[in-house]
Image 1 (cartoon, rainbow, N blue to C red):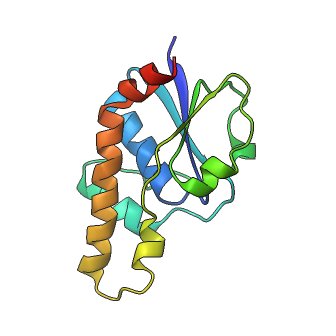
Image 2: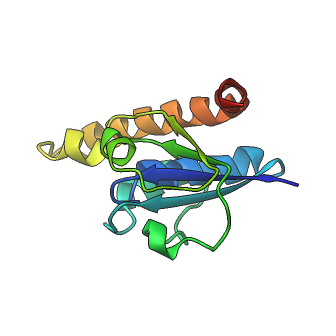
Length: 143
């Protein structure tokens, strides 16, 4: 039986969405992946764009809160930002694993150049992919 993995961040708009997308794309045959936020900010268009560049379409994803998750037990909850880690709701039986990533919307809020903005999103996208590539390492450390 496949383990259920949740990626949690504040707004479920960018980092957790990218992690869910990479998870399903790279390891969907081994795990069930979900994402949610402690709040709902809507799907970030830059996240959709850079994931599409990487061959992963997340355009149909929806921004959800933890209250909107399916009624299933999460085996592992990866917090992908400090706020989510500090405010993580209780998941009975779920192991919490913190893997923080920079927040592209915050880092690019002052930028005007599209290429500069996209380069930040691409860097975080690639960092998240590396984490997904080695997700078993994180899980084994918690078992």
